[in-house]
Length: 491
Image (cartoon, rainbow, N blue to C red; front, side, top):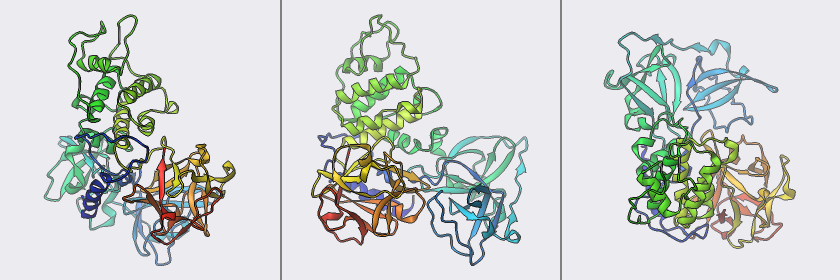
């Protein structure tokens, strides 16, 4: 892990134990908790990006500043790896990769005589058999990535075959090809090479889980919220028996002691100790026919009902319950990876912390520190691009709720009602489609429990005249240290 990230995480560990409760939850001590700020998880993109060619950008090249990805400046003369040609109503663009991230460049930006073909992969032989698996990078450092090469030589751009984000599964043919490289299998027919330092063999149990769930599964394992039998086959549907075990582990992680285990099962068809304990705790109910059907795959509805009882038994917060829930629109099925991730994420806001969760299910009301009766509001409940975001009396409607969204490794505040992003627009705060630097938000926690919101230009969200009243105008300006730049996130 990079030194700056280690320092950041250590500071976060110290800070979160001091922060005030945002949701009014009583503090509960738990020794199994692992504190990591969710805003450290910055996925570069979701899957392996294969390259067709590469090019050195000419000195006058400019990246296309469209509304597809957040843009960082690609230095003139930089080497970029070309994925494919993309056509839109506004023109043709090359999707390129620079330092692990995807960008759109106007097709005309890269002269054809500058485009060079990459080295082709070699076919595997009978000796090239997968010995073990590993994972690219550290999923808790989600801005991590690794390049994969056609030959074990990274000095030549032509050898670069693909870019893999942290969490990508690696099939290892030879873990010690030489001092620096591993030999791996790509697809079923070709071999390639990756640096040993870019692969974590110990995280192989995360392979197959959704990239958005992997960080939380790893943290759940550290926090003793999982067990070995469920840390695999993430495409399997979660069963009632498995949910009982996860629920009991969550109950313990909340700092509660389990009662003495009953020896008699309330059900005819199972003697599973976690099912019996879940019944003792009131997490599951008795049935009229005394059958539980422990291996039955859960529907979202049944899963949420059991979660509701778990949250009630443990006196958890509303936001914890919201995160633990699985929304009906995701389908009627519950899979292992999402359930494990949600159980971990639900644990975090239950404790004494100003922890902000990046999750579309958590719509925060962002209130001013000096007057918590007014909050950020998309005026007139507008769903139109360019609508003003100002202050208004709290009502809890969706035009006053924002969730923290992550795209291409950057965080933004997206309105629940319109799905547009909070933006700095010529001195005003408005909502627009995402795509420019000013929309990138970072959150600075203060020791009084408040949060300062800084945009990609280094400016802080502020009340224009400093008075937190309904109808007040918002603005981004330089950091002042005044309370008008402090906000509270409430569920």
